[in-house]
Image (cartoon, rainbow, N blue to C red; front, top):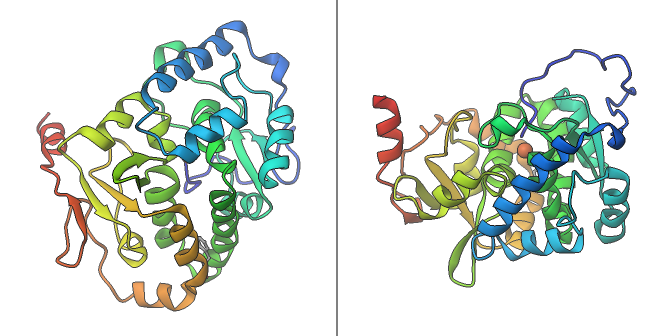
Length: 290
Ligand code: PHE
Ligand code: FE
């Protein structure tokens, strides 16, 4: 997830100045590896035909189907060959500037714990399954790998402009909850979706959420919810196009303009939106009535 809340103000004992810690892979118990395997099997059954080809290719080329929680050293060696990225362990959420600096230098920070067997469907903080299964396959795609590093540089810049809230929405609606149009159909690529059995179905098949064509400025004005399924998904036409529009746009004037515009409420649809599916919002309404 985006690191918009953080737990510690300085690296905790045992962490390096850049907040990384040894993964200490040997420490994981059989039961913990078993939780990974259960989650992996469940998602692998769901994702063909639902996840973007780039994501499925990443699972394959990184050999993520081998049993157990991946060893970051081995995973990083493969990833380094493909796109120059590494996976490093951190003790939990890290400060924004630390997070962005790692991304800008092609290091993806991953949680060093795994959820318990009785928490397969829901957890508050990103664990190694969300971080590695959800995020790392896309980092094997050269275009997406460039996007993530550019985002890190953009994050450091957003901090200077005081516009982190706007930039974080871009991360949320692409890296975490993005959809893509592929071969005339919608596919999922956001880590928050592909690592969740229920949201993998909901994002594509449920009548409740809106599915709207991606527009950079629009996305950066749109609120999001962190505690339930999204009511809004934004659909990119291709990873090339996502990279092109974000890299070619200077965000400084955009941040200045955004400061003059109202935020857009989560489920609102604007006249200029390219609406792919107008959601019924029935899921959100039912949850609100509970
Ligand atoms: N072009 C952006 C800027 O000027 C940086 C950025 C690139 C942000 C890619 C996000 C993704 O700040
Ligand atoms: Fe995440």
